[in-house]
Figure 1 (spheres, rainbow, N blue to C red):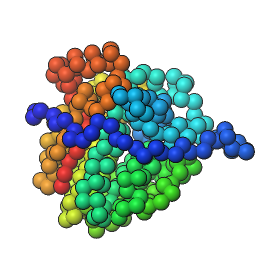
Figure 2: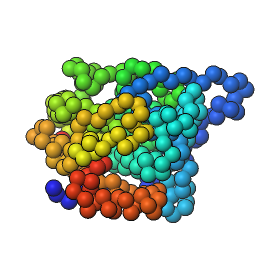
Figure 3: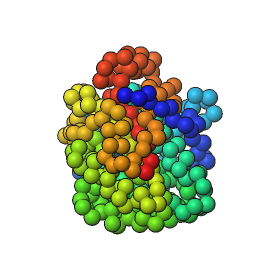
Figure 4: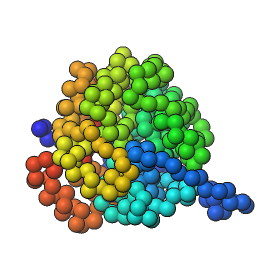
Length: 319
């Protein structure tokens, strides 16, 4: 396996002081909290939402502000009738899990900002598949809303319905939130293919079958390759598939991961138009100060054990 590439971007994305959303507790009336009735893969988004809320104020390595400012995550969590402290639910308090979620989200923000900054006056599309309750469109609003950028958040109907209740739309820019199923045959035809496109898939591809994952990558190339673009996604290794029950935050939901790769070239093999630009292993992510010392030791040990060095990684493909 070729050496994994370090991300070619700054370690901290400088958000432009995002305004904190109004806290429901400060409102004149207290609207009832939104009940959550998700299961399986859709329910996993609550664990990642809880992680982003918990770490929204965690300082950067230099101490000059939060490492990953996301006030919308806490606001969304506060609007849900879901107790993230209950061990029977989908979140864990283990710092290692939460840190991984934050570092992955930060890297994807960095890669998205890079895509938007390249030739900034050009028309572009950002397509965020399985967006869940993620606030990336809000966190990066200053990078895209006043440019010729079309931002599309997409997920299954139940998730979209919940998102409309707890996550605000950006207050400017060409934004849309749509329902779709990536395993269907015709959803790509609903997405305009008239400009370079970035497809973001966070916490998605590992839940597909190998056939559906390859079909998704080929379909993206078929739809957007004439205008070029990128795909960013996180992947699990083949060893992780065998030990996934260890991650109680996910296994409690009933979600089962069925697709794993140890080498990013296995993703690129789905279509000859795909090229690997970056393959970032978990101990190479910017922001390692978020990990506790024991997490760092564990990750260092994993890096020397066959099959464990690629348990979790992040990939950027070009087409």
